[in-house]
Image (cartoon, rainbow, N blue to C red; front, side, top):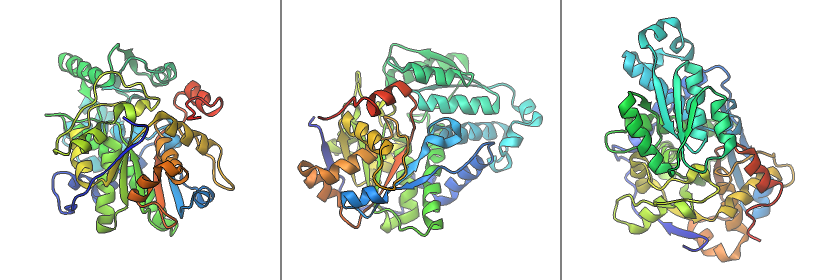
Length: 404
């Protein structure tokens, strides 16, 4: 695979399609956002406008939803874990979740009815930290399994929230299969953002929880009387954030929806690979996936995410690691009066690609196919901050993963 690969997805979008975007209506995602707002410490995250950077690049504007401050855990992942684990508890108790805001969910009344639950998950770091944080908030036991090569900072961050952490000698997708076996033997509840046959409810809830950040962003845009994005660049691992975001944006905008592009690292470009095959099926990437974008190092697209993305995304870009590294450095060193923000290895790819498409003449054909010009407003999701401090410093301070 070359450094950059792009494929457009040309089809007539069926905006009345059932079974995929019906989970991501504004009404459904507002329920999730309302639940999040009931948690102690909830606050909106910033929608950063990079006006000076956009002007330099020849764009109208760049919006970045900065999730590094979400719930104090340095990433967006608590949104999905909270909504999924909350829904599991609500269904187990047969109580509508609208009647179970956070303060009631941790009440003696509810805890007595519920008893103890053990939640288990596989993670590269951020998702596990989100599950561990929710477990701590809900006073439930959490076991987190991590693939080989997981950074020590990420392990420590999860352990600090009271979860038990087990690092395996397997890759991410094989670690998920290991967790499935262990959960089945021990009666644990798996909280995973990827879906498979017979396991769709919790991934659907996680995707809805993630989508709340996009609804919040669009509400901020409307509140500040800003023009809506013309483009949305969404990074994908198993596709939970990208799929949920794509589904919600489709419901919010319909025929006015922005050009939506899915971004992946070259080493784990399973959505891109599936789009190239063009047979409607998911195609997997196997083996080791040595990318700095650890949260995107997933070789098997989730079923729900694929259903949404394959129908409503406009294209796919497979990117080298230095694109994300450049995005991290650009975020930390803004142009003019633009606000500085901290963007981690899985978060910098959208801003990094936006920059590269506008300055690199060799990518002019891709830029033109995507339709980027002086009228374009690009929405990027910076999904994490410096969750691995050493890696962040190596990249931003010392220039690691520089294309030059």
